[in-house]
Length: 579
Image (cartoon, rainbow, N blue to C red; front, side):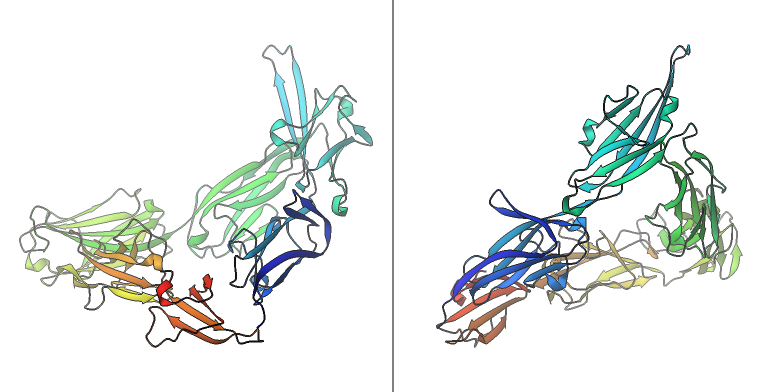
């Protein structure tokens, strides 16, 4: 029989390495230039042949680079980025002994073009005895390894002490990442072309990079003007144009538009200082800013808010007479119908009421009120005093915006002898609900009553979010559908009535138990003599079914949870299960 040996592993490299060196005798450092190809090969020994897995953090697959190459012997990354530097691990295991792990640190070298920014300091005493104008030129370049800077004025190399009017220093808090040139009390010869040269001393063949800034007596930070109102209220589907112009700045500032939504809408068009938003939607509403920069002083910024008219989430609720301890509506008592709508902008929201299709005005027995129009969502109430049979019917709440341009919302509420508060029950056989990991399940609560309210689902056994990430999930039919359930979802779930689209009374609630079973699979491998190919594989879902025959001699059983190998042993029998 072929001998069985635990795995060993070592990492070899190919591709475009600048340098490979030992570090503290425990780790190798692989240096590569950004944009080159990284190629690392994991050489393994062991029998049975070990399974190989590449990761970027020890024991974790959270930072995978390319799923197709994670389990290959060779890790191949074309055009490597600086963000892909770090420690890479190769792990080999074949079920014998501990896994073999080796690592190598990949250091990605790069040098970006330097950027010069200019700041001016003008100080003047009240009595004008002293006047000074000082200019700071700051040079910054992103790099690895750390960059070295040098300054030139025209063709003249500037160094500390070479000119009494010039100081060169590195601020302590930047730890050498910037180099500042200070021109104190500007002289005529200080108006010139200044070059900042950034160098990483040609490591990995990376050439020096430089930038030139022309300093004149007209050098100034940018100023801009926005030729629009603030805020801008528009209808959905309308085309909006925002115009921004520069009113000062030397060199000529560059204009850029930004949005509070992280990025500009995909269909937006920018031409010069004009931003055009065709057929705008509610999702594209927000703050839009014009930013002007010329690397002198601070960028100039002007903003405006675009408000897109909208009406949404129309809801209602019925409140029985609050002076009587009864959840039902009754003849001779008061009943209140409330209607709520989210409006944008809220100050344009208008409500009106109809009864059986005819306009309804506020009176002594039909009192109509509305909340402060600046409060969102807006709410209107219809109080029916001393309810009579003749008051039964369909009441319609109408919501619209004064600016028009969007459809109004209408909400019908029926008041009759059959209008009753809700009740909740769990269907027979629906609790406890048993499922396996990965299944799709439906938790169900039956709601009765007229009208039927929105049902709110939440965790009852602990303060934890629902599967969709929220603390409460709404359901209009009482069913909570959960896709790809996991063991963490096991527990009690509460369904309860909300006041929305129903009665404003004490919430009715019920509990549903969900039990998610772990999928445990036993894999038993028997290897014949003079063969490296396993045979006799048996997979047995947990709990074990009777009639399973455990192999004897030359066998190995692994138990797995889901797809992850948890333990390997020469043989696992029912008496020594790990659970």
